[in-house]
Image (cartoon, rainbow, N blue to C red; front, side, top):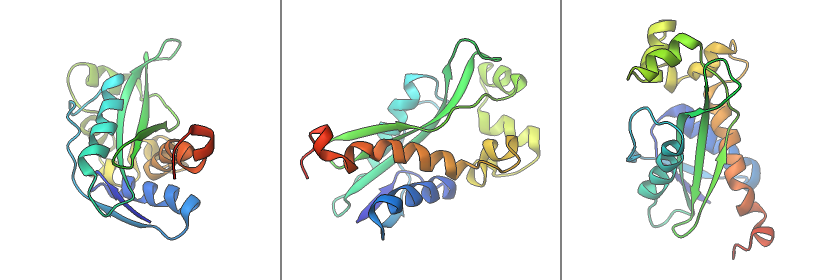
Length: 176
């Protein structure tokens, strides 16, 4: 099986490879930069659209699937900040796409305030932590959990959730 990921981010690529390999065994995974078509700091449904666009824009002949992954903030009541960060994955076969979400978490209130004033989460977290390329390594989640959960884990879970219809084709009415 051949899969192409619409990102050169090593954490995203590693998560995609783990998710696909857990279902399909030996999987060849390549990566390419793919436009999200959304703002650099997406919110709500824009995050979902970014994942879909990345998957569609990454798709190439010769691949079984393409994958788009986008992280963004979703408005959520009953939280400290009013926002929860989710990674959204889109798996696309050239005709149909499926979606999955990773676990959500809250950023510290100051991070959310800075993002709401127009900055990107990644930029704010690098400033806060002093760790360059944080999002390409273990991610903000890795910093906030003491590396108990890292960005590739969130990607793996989101992609696994998006793969559910593909590995249960009969239940979802997807032709092989």
